Every structure is written in C-alpha cells, then in structure tokens.
Image (cartoon, rainbow over all chains, first blue to last red; front, side):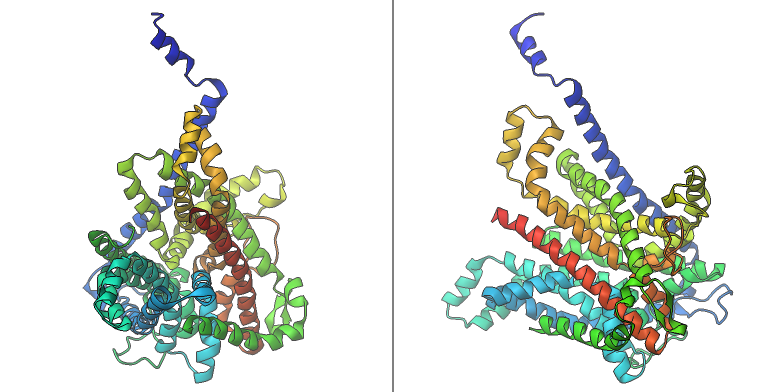
Length: 295
Length: 284
C-alpha cells in the first residue's frame, strides 16, 4: 500500500489547473479537427446527392436547352471547352514551367535565382481575377474579341508558378551523385540534365504538372474575362472565339433562378469535382508509388 | 526570366489601362463609397471595406480552427490516422471555388438566412454588428465560406512549420514534466510563431483574393453597412459581377479595382513569404 513506487507515481500525477488546461487544449484540437471535416462532408455529400441523379450520357454529350427553364440537355459545351482550354494551357505552361524549374535548380546562382524563386512564390498567391483582368487588358482588347486561346493563356499563367515550384522541389530531390557520375563520365552538362536528371525526376514532375492541371481546371474568374461563355458546342480546333467551360456553366447555373438550371449546375459540379479528384489522386499515387514527392 | 517578364507585363498593362480613370477621380477613388458608374461616380471604398470585413470574419473563424487542426495532426493524432486525416484536409483545398459558391448559394445561404442570422439578429438587442434585417447573402456568410477555403492553406503550412521544431526542445519540456499542452505552449509555439503568422497571412491573402465563391453569396450591394448580416461587395466579386455588362470607363475602373486588389494581396503575400522563409531558414 505504501510501497515507494506507488508514492512516487502519486507524486508525479498532474493535478488541478494544469490538468484542466491540458484537457481543454485537447478538446480544442480534437474539436477543430471534427469541425474542419464538417464542411468537406457537407459539400461532397450535397454535390453527390444532388448531382448524381442527373448524370447520364445525355448530360455529357449535349449542350443546355435553349430555355434555361427546361429540363434535360447537358454540359457538353462546357466539358469540351474545358478540355480544349486545359490542353492548350498545358502546352503553354508545361515547357516554360519545367524549363524554368530546371534552370533554377541546375544553373541558377546567386541573387538572381533567389529573386526569381521569390517572385514565383508570390505569383502563386495572385488572385485569379487579376490574371483574368490582365489577360483581358492585354489580349482581348487588342484582338477585339473573346477567345479560347486567351483563356488558355490566363490558365497557363495560373499553372506556371505551381509547376515551377513543384518541379523545383522534385528536381532538388534527385541525388547529386547521379549528376556527378554523369559529368565524371564526360557527358556534357546539358545532356546530363536531359538524359539523367529529368528521367529520374519524371514521376515527380508528372505529379506536379497534374496537380497544376487539376487546380486550373476549376478556375472560373479568369474565364469570365477571356472567353465569356458560349451556348453552343464548339469544334475541337476552333480557338478563336468565345467558348464555354465547365466552371463557367456551373457559375451561371448557380446564379440562375430556375430549378432545372440549378440541378444541372449540381451535376456539373459533380463532374468537375470528379475530374479534379481523379487527377489529384492519380498524381499523388504516382508520387508516393515512386517515393519522389512528399505525399 | 520569363516569369519576371510576365509579372512585369501584368502590372504594366493593367495599370496603364486603369490609370486615366483613377487619375480623373483622384483620391476619391478609394475614399468615397459612392459607386454609380453610369453617372461617373467611381468611389470604391465600400468594396475595400467588404474585402476587409469578409477577410476579418474569415480569419476570426479560420485561425483558431486551422491551428487546432494542425496541432491535432502533429501532436494528438495516432500515427495511422495522421496521413488520411491530413489528406482529407488537403481535399478541402482541391474543391474549386465555383463549387464552394454553388453550395454556398444553394445550401448555406438559405440555411443561414432563414434559421441562423435572423434569430441572432433579433436576440442581439441592437448590437451594430448584428443589426437586421438579416439576409442569407451577407458579409457573414461570405466570411464563413472564405474561412473554409483558407483553412487548408493555414493548416498545411502550420504543420510544416511545426515539423521544423527541433526534437530537443520538445524533449526538454517533457523532461521538465510538462503536459502535452505545456509542451506545445513552451516548446512548439514560440519556435513556430513567425512561421504560423506567415501561414495565417497566406490564408488571409487567399481570402482577400477569392472571387467566385464570394460573388455568389455576398449579395451585391455597393453601400457600406456596419451589420455583418447585410449584403455587400468585395473588390474581387464586384469585378466579377459587374464586368459582363460594363463598358468604357466602368471597365477601366473595375480594372483599377483589380490593380488595387493585386497590390493589397501582394503586400500580404510578400510579408507572409518573408515570415515563412525566416522560420525555414532557422532550420538550415
């Protein structure tokens, strides 16, 4: 009963106010976690429950009916537009982004490299509406009309910082030994980079790119200023006129007073979220499978 | 390189575009809240106010919750749960803002407008922040949506910052007999303080720049209102809402608002990056 171990244990028990504060803090942390999960569950739950009923072949293959108050029809004009824009935006952003990252890691030195890095960091925080406003001032006004390719430029501008930062961190993970071994064998610098570093970092680079694509696919604000939306499905190669995009259609549907349009918006949101989730999950899988990027 | 060029172009073109209008209006561009573009009145104060108010509401809600979540994930969560839960929080960041807006306007606005803001307003006895009539589309609702959107950013960066706290600090606190909370208070938080501030500022930058979700739930009123439950406008959302039908000077004024917004978020983001860099450099 009174043996030394028990007395020692009793004396080291935490009592009173310290205990209470510890419990309160624990409650705060756990409660925050639960609270943070609530919106996620609610949003995904609503999107799935309200949108699933409308998902059908019709939804992904037809444009909206002429009168918004009608049921039926779909978001194909938006889905196609998004695919086109993302393709062009990727073609613009990926080469520039990867090249910039390669330059920063392999060749950049001193204050200039630090300045570029800092600016890229800052650019990740530029409001998307400002990018839209800029592309409007720069491209739409000078060419005189809205167009898909100016929207792609805007999206590329948003993707660029994400690609540069992601690729940079992946390239930094490539061990220097590989570079040194290649140089020791007499391979010229540029060839080492292209032939050794890039292939080694490839999965991580793909991950960074896919995450950038996922982010840009959901952007709406820049599209308002550059492509403005269209009621018709446009051709696969027409980039020179206004076009629709999935986020734009969801936006217009959300603002609509008509229930059928709102229902289509929910379904469109489901399609968009699915696209983004698939991209994100595949990207993360590629990364963790090969251990190149922190999950 | 290309990046610098792009940023320079961005600033140049938008500023050139909007400068004539801003100069013509003078300092009243930011000090007046009289916004009637059709009559040439271009005072944007109510939009600046809206941006600041919604961002403030968002931060008041988001900061305690996101730091709590970050601490939970770093200190409290069982190892096996850590990655899945962190992944779920990151998922909040993957939801596009238009979906937040859709959910906000079709679910949150009716819910809050009919069942929450109204009763709060009625039982608050004339407290200016809660004055009625309370509508669903309001600063407060926008603030809540912004809080949800800022949370994953603050949490992610705070977690990274907490991870840089040297183990020795924690062990020292534990050796002195500290409880879990005391370890956090004594060893983790002081070390991570500037990094956490940076994380919060990054979340703030996100909240200030958010356009679509806010445009859908804030109600679109260009007057300043003290009550949180009244509709309003933020700089970003007024650009998005008024742009489709704007012409001439109106467009240039909206571009000017865009430049102003960019400048504000730039200040916040640069400050935040400096703070986060400083904490990261402590590690190296």
